[in-house]
Image 1: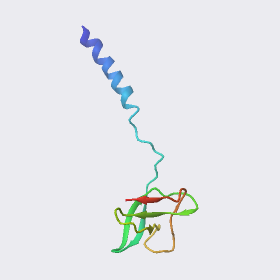
Image 2: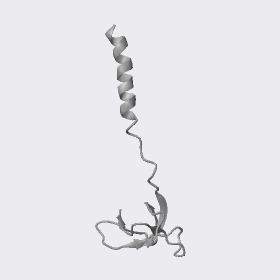
Image 3: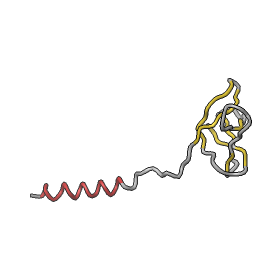
Image 4: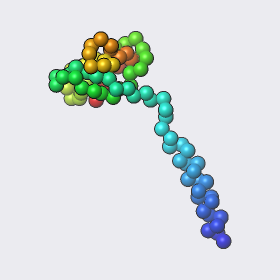
Length: 87
């Protein structure tokens, strides 16, 4: 008799707990391109809106690379924070 009551209660507890594990949809990753030492490479960055240049660096190398929207240097991506993204 107790098992008939226990299973629905457990299902309710798990459903409530799992509702807090969803991923936030505010992260907007875009694919950008850098002209690195090995030529053009694609990178996934969180650069969407802003007035600062979007830049990345590959740790432990301190060299900064500007991120572009396409594989040419005509369309740089912008960032709101201006912070360098470590990859």
